[in-house]
Amino acid sequence: MVSKYASLKSTNVDIIILSCGSSDELRAVTNNAIQSLRSSEFSETVNFNILVIESHKEIKPYQYPGSRTIYPKAKFGFHRYVNIGIKLTKSEYVCVCNNDLIFERHWASKMLEQFSKDDTLLSASPYCPITHPFFEISSPTDVVYGYEVRKHIAGWCLFVKRDLLSKIGLFDPKYRFWYADNDFANTLQKNSVRHGLVLTSRVVHLGSATLETIDLRDQYKLTVAERFYFEHKWLGRSYNSYRYHRRKLYKHINNAEIE
Image (cartoon, rainbow, N blue to C red):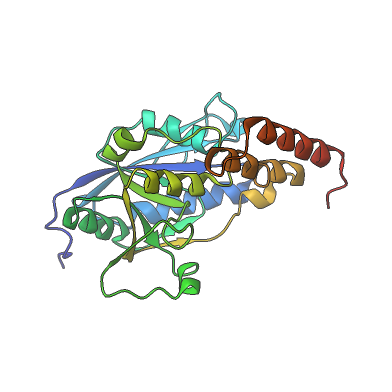
């Protein structure tokens, strides 16, 4: 039986997956994502170029099956690693992903279908059947436009046209983890770039499996501490105030009893 998507022209899509394979279980999470990704589309329709950026350098030179795996020398930062991936890829479409995802059939074809229908659409996210029902989204069309984080902009899966980057530039490398998607949302809105949640494209986000394995002090630095820079950049907090409160928080984290 021929798929209804088989008549579409084959499109190259660069997939950038950020991974931390510090245990057998976490490596399995990444491998499961890649396996579901590769089986989600016909190669005649979509050709995935999968680049895994692995932050746990102790497993080098391990290569995740079906991918090219790299181990940057640079210290981990979500946006810093995303930018490395962008510079190493060149397809018209690029998708930045967490490793804790399960890709449903034809998710990318349905995403590309919406890009072909709307020339103004430069950025999109797929619908997650676990997360998005909480927002009670209803729409007469297949795309809901907006900039609300988690509702419209799913930081765990951002599917964009590479042309977008010539308009807004690379991702701000100062964000190591939290507030990265908030910054992206504000950047899109500032530059009047449309972002859509594609309701027909389904990708399951399993949750923050990697973050939960990190030392609690490092978790606070990757999450709570990011707020001060976001407030400096977007909400008018002075640079000196940003630096002062970040140092104060780091001192508290390093000295506190965290359970």
